[in-house]
Length: 390
Image (cartoon, rainbow, N blue to C red; front, side, top):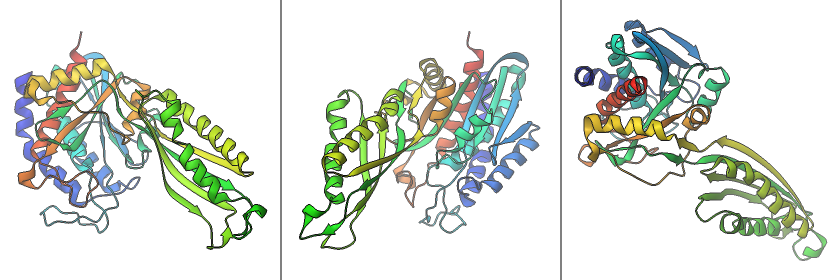
């Protein structure tokens, strides 16, 4: 079976590359992946793989093996970013202000390639493989909607991957435990009383309350959290005041909270509210908090990681596996991993000689297309490894 997987992946190398280039030239933003979804369905129809639509532009396809068994899902995201692509590559985006600057074009192409391989050997598969093409990852909304529409029903395990520009092509990272952070949206409004700048005692200075809050809230990180737990509170938008000699009566602050623990994510809004209420009251003002939970932390399950790393060793060798620290960015793969066991792997796609050396979300981002065959094979070997485990 191993030799057959290797052969089929190699036979479909150009097919996957051409698909990726098509998606790259025709990027679509979150929730508007209409043509992308249409092309995915066309390819599935050519292979006679049944599918269903979900979450507007999403797709779940099904490959049934020869024998009954468990069900594993392979996930790819499809949306692009509102970025103007720079550079002169032949497959440059045809749409102004839109480009695949995060690798989702590659994810989609690799999963279609994996579908072709798995479909060509389904007589040897014990169980069922679900192919999950997901919309709106960049808005961290697609996975949540798929779950709400029962897209994970009957699925025992899920595996996803992310092409990663910080890793050289041929290197793969997949480690157990927290891998990416929860990402929450923190909105704060502070009320004071306006007045003349020359007579601050007649007002309640919302600007001073804001300054006190921004300085003191960092005590959450330094004094209320274990030094072994990573927590980030950053406030990037601060609006207060209308004129140089007027005491501001209102302030508006927006920021982000990041952590790697579901428990800490639940505690943060309560802690921020307690700090804010105390500080505002001490200055005779009022504090209002709107805390919008984004993704939970992305946490890889141990057995799933073992299946993925064993698969990597089987075709790339142990030297292909690398370790790196967890990331403070967020991924909506986290929603799936909160529901069922699974893992996400990071697939190296960096190659300076080919100009694939720009970070994710950069206007010149590109991937070394040799990484596509690696990702395709890992998708297949993970599915087979999970379904064939004792």
